[in-house]
Length: 88
Image 1 (cartoon, rainbow, N blue to C red):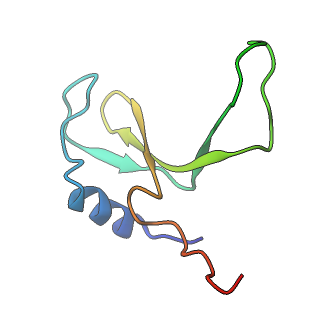
Image 2 (image 1 turned 180 degrees about the vertical axis):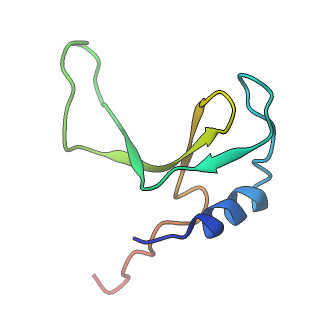
């Protein structure tokens, strides 16, 4: 998946994700290169164990240009995930 930063910024603007930084109040941000994912855990009985390779939420990361605080935005909620093949 290869999205341009311009496309990501447009989607964030469309969703009105334009408020200043929650930590320092700065109004300028940068979309970081690449993507990340939040691992979803189904059970926390053993807090010392993390399941790897399971379900996850793909996210784009946005950093405040002043203090560096990072926010995560789910690609699916922004409409930026590839469409599933309905033939399968």
